[in-house]
Length: 635
Ligand code: WTA
Image (cartoon, rainbow, N blue to C red; front, side, top):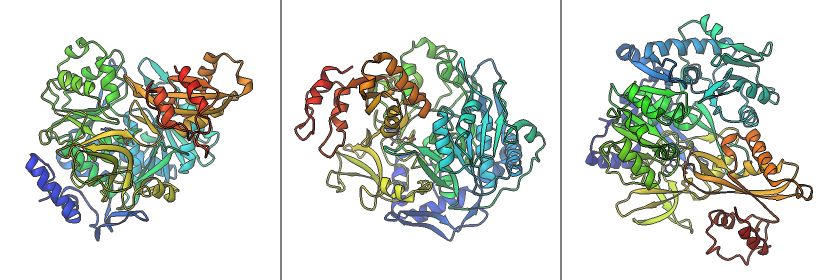
């Protein structure tokens, strides 16, 4: 027996021990009993972190969509797979059964095939949170094409970088999207992006907002007529266990975004197994994750994990504040949501509103509350626990990453006693460790250091698209024979983990990872800017906000500073997207640098946080005098 569903703490420890002592036997049993394989594996795991090379279930053949859809048709054909809740509460929600999902995915797969898309081709999906987003993802998986979903809040420049990096042949988008009271012209953004993407031969367009858009002859096609003419059958492509399933970009501290590559079998097994346990999903439950499918949370815990378990998963198109800040709670009541998974930034924004917006709604269906994306601070944790969970829905503070594919450190609800601000215990099969400054493993408890994982798990990313060396350098070179997460953590007296935050130059703003370098590169494009440096500082709702230090060229000195600030944020919006805008911009004459020319961000961070009591040794700086000047002019 594989212990697919863990129900009490003793069992957790017992299964955990097994998963560490005999990882291959353990995962083999899980894979064997709970999934549909066209052919079984020859070897459960082979790995070498020095290369790094990781292979799970080698030799196995399968199609993820047969596991997420087809195998449910007999027993759950009329069960709702996806509940689509539109942006506007006056528009009807849509319930898509497993049978209907099968038909829609097969039709979409045929459309892709007719467009010449084959196994292994890359497909860029740039869509709002409408059913076609989940369906196109699954259609790619069905034909063996590699999807690359780009969050539809990214700018045209960010989109074209991602399309070109993975050489996508086709883009799936919509005429536009609704976001609260606003509409966004997605198709125009795609048109701009494609001016610099020669490899894209066709664009499929979903009609969502009925706007009047330009359709380029020979390239752009409305999706609906193609679907209407497509067959509702599509024999799933048989994939090898280690064939790529998707690419998803994440920010690095330097350089262009990293296209993390996730493969087929291991990703499916791990996301399904974590979903079942971390949310304690039961057959008739309704599960809702508020993330966007443009992020890993949406891939793993809106689409693949829930559907592999035959669950009912909610997709919400809108925002928490429209038509008012009661919208989330209205949806919980309306669909009788049992598991609710969101981000601390949303919780903090909602906690700032009056409680009457919560109390208006019946939240008694809720059983489990989740949090993901950044550390959840104590105040937000209590607000969530008291007012939403009414103190009887455990909060699962789930720590994981785009790179890890699935949840890594988390309580199991009703099993692990929770502790606010702690992600608590490693999930089954996960072997975390903390490293000190001398690169030694910290033994025992009550220690803090760099968070690493010592042993492979099935859903880990296998490489960075087109740049395996960067994969090795970023994750496997800081510490020998370990995956380095880029996060710091502490372990308390009982072995619970608390994530303390990034230790590199990635800043998490409203749960979104932002690298400092790409933002600085964008700012430096402004003709009046000579140099810039970005740091994070604490923000009540966003967790962190961005603070920019900008040196102007002589020509910029005479310009109005507020206008310059607007222009700088405009450039950032164009290059990356509005999520990367700076909250504060300080113009300065210089930046503190080491003798080798490296900006001392540590000092800039402290100044932005107004914590200048102990700046450490500044004597090694090339230009210590600029520090005082920056402190005096801090915003
Ligand atoms: C941070 C999101 C504290 C962390 C799934 C990680 C968290 C980065 C938590 C990955 C949490 C995520 N507590 N920090 N529960 N969850 N993080 O790739 O810094 O968008 O490295 O994946 O978010 O963000 P990503």
